Each structure stands twice: as C-alpha cells, then as structure tokens.
Length: 494
Image (tube, rainbow, N blue to C red; front, side, top):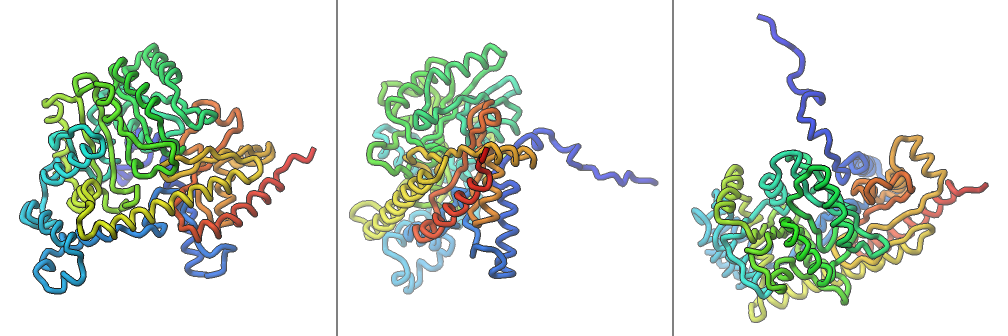
C-alpha cells in the first residue's frame, strides 16, 4: 500500500481567513526584540543598551507594576485552602483576605479551584460583578446577564460568533483600531466597516463620519449589525465626553445597532476634566431601558491598577437581548465548559474590592492610588517627551495605557522604507529598536486613517506608559538621541 507523503496541512491549505489577519502587536518586530533580548542575556554588552524596553503591549506586571496585595492573598488562599486552618495564616494574610477566601471557597463546586464551574461563571461571582456595576452606574444589573470570561478577548470573540452570519454582516469599528476586532471579525467571516476618529479633534468620534460609513455600507449591500466603541480608547488614549456618548447611544438606538462597549480601561483615566461613564449608565440616564437599545459591555482584570493580564479574567454584561438569545449564548459558552476559575475569582475581586471599614481597605487604597498616580506621571512625562521631538506631535493622553504620536518623516526616509517594502512607521520602529532597545508598535498595525496612510505619508507609533518612572527617565535620552540622528540622516538637504 502506498501513502501520499505530501503534508496534509500547509500554508496553502489552511483556512484562508487565518492568513488574512494581521496581529503586529506580536509580529515580526516583537519577535526580533525577543531575539535581541536573548542575545543580550547570552552576551552582555553586545548591544548599546542593557535590555529591551517592551513598550508594545499593555502588559502592566511584565513591566514592573506590582500586584494588589489583597487580590494575591485571596487567590493564594483559594488555591491552598488548607492554609485557612493553620495558625500561620493569621500572620501571613490579612483577616479581610482570610474571610473573603473562606466565602469564595464555600461557593465553589467541590470547594476547590480545580473543578469545572457553571459555563456562565459561578453565581456568587456574577452577583459580585452585578453589584459592582450597579454601585458604579447607579442603575441595577442582573447576574443573569453577566457572563464571566477568559479576559475581554474571549468575550469579544463570542459576541462576534453571535452576530456574524456571513460576509454580508458587518461591524462598525474605529480607526485607528484595536487589531483584536478586525481579526475577530475576519475569522468569524464578517466584514469590518471602519469609521475614522479625528486626530485634529483630539481623536474624538464624529457622528456624521459614522453615519457616512453606515450609509455607504448599506448601499453596498451590507447588513451592519453593531458598532464598536473603545472608551477609554486603544490606541489613541482619548476619553469620550458624556455628550459624545449620548450621541452614540441615540445613533445606535435609532439605527438598530448593537452597541459593543469595550470598557477595559475604565480605571485608566488620567485627566481631571474627563471621567469614565459606562454606556449602559448613559443609556439609562437618557431614559432608555433594555427594550430600547442593546448593549454588550466588556471589562477585564488585565488593565487598570490591577494589571493581572495572565489571569485571563473578565466579563461581559449583555443588556437588551431576549432570554432565548441569552440561552443561545450560554450554549456557545458551554462549548469551552467554563471560564478559568482563577480569572473568575480575580474578576469578582476587581468588582468587589475592600470597602471603607474593612481591615485591608487602607492598604488596598494606598496601593491603588500609588499605581494610578504613577501612571499619571509617566503618561505626562512621555507625552511631553514626544512633543519635544522634531516633526513629532502627540495628542493629550486622557486614558488607557498608550500614546499614539504622529511623525512627519522626511521624504528620504519614506523612500528608504518603500525600498525595503515596509511602511514608513515600521521602518522607523525597526530602526528605533535596533538602536535603543525600545520596542513600540508601528501605527500601520492599527490601520490609522482609512485609505490614506501611504499616500499622505502620515505615520504613528504606539507606545505604552507602563515602564517604571525610572526606566522612562532613562529611556527618554535614548529616544531623543535616536530621533535626532534619524532625522539628520534622512534630512532633505536639497
């Protein structure tokens, strides 16, 4: 008997949708950075910088942000419940953490973190999330409408599975975009309809622009089913005003669109004149209930002052869907059996942290405020640094974890980039990495302004504010020296 020795799976035979997506946040530049880091570790002094500064991802604890003690104490006790019965526990853990861990363990199947749970998440955790939402917004929330998830990304993917039936179904998404959305839409067979944020308007959202994109999509035969809003925004760092949010709610209600509210950076607001307001709160404040507008909001334990990315904890709140639809969502969630239990615990803690009067409250508040105040300083320091560089401008960072400065590159640099077959901002980012060890993401990874990037020569980079204050202070001179050298090398001398 003879067998075909040709590989059954090749790049040519895999799902073509997989080949279409691009996730530059962990792309070639990031892989090159990892190789440079390995080289530095094996041969110290081989590069003109001591380490790679990973400014490409919102990965707080990887860049030195300390975890919240109360959260980690509770997680430790839940994973090791026998500690609760040992005398040493009272010297190692706060009474508040011990009491919370006891309550959590009692609510878990088999009283152990190694068990499967309800596919929607443990009921008591969903109650904690619902109560936290109600306290935040001033409007009720139902645990039946809460789905605990493995971070916000799995919730977003599940939602796209629900909404997208064919490539004729479309989702409105902002540009610059978060690549998670375009990738998820493509993988689930839908069509992304981009709408442009206004850089000259501090990256604000203009309703007339969204209306234009919606009308053009409908004329082309697409069924636009939902609109994505990221607030505070990734990658641009703006925080929407209440008036702008009200416009968006009215627009989605009138047009019959599901409002997909990505609110994972809600605890990352850095300016006094802006405040986070959930879209559910805005809708309810306008007098609209679940019969008037459908909203799916996403939150995560990865960002904010908690920064527990690796725990993969998050939730989505689903408002305005019928009980029959919720049943279908539960069925899809059941395919993966359940969200990880560590992430479930952490999400409940994020939404129900220590309160005034609890033994752990003062320590918790001090740690939270210290992280937040440091993030404010770092954001402002980097914003000022970018704005001080030749031909670079950076809008005010109001929230989230990123700056998105714009660079006007010399024509010679653009020609050099074209010769290498890369976008100008990719060319700049690669040169920056090799010269300084600073890893940023080219703005082209976020698609910037629809259809005009290459023609206009506009380019950006995205840089996190997450390295420590000390590392940022050391990073800025390296950035400045590189930028001056780069601009001088490619300066038009005609």
